[in-house]
Amino acid sequence: MSDLTSLFVELKTLIVETLVLEDITASEIETDALLFGDELDLDSIDALEIAMAMEEQYKVTLGDDPDLNQGIFLSVRTLAEFIVASREE
Image (tube, rainbow, N blue to C red; front, side):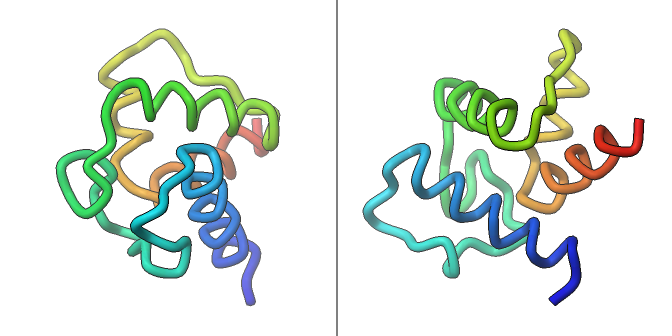
């Protein structure tokens, strides 16, 4: 399993555990599915909780630009890409 694939699995698990999702398992979350308005239908409070969990687990911090942050939270893939890019800085 590649590092990126492992990160996808970790993020899916983090989302399910952080948000205490009972109707879906980590393995059921599609990597490219929209997090908002699609199968998960998350809201801004959910995004904040995920951001805090990511900061704690991956030591990454989101910026103050709402448009940029919205792009980061499109899917599990975009969250993973943000973490990888942040590690490279």
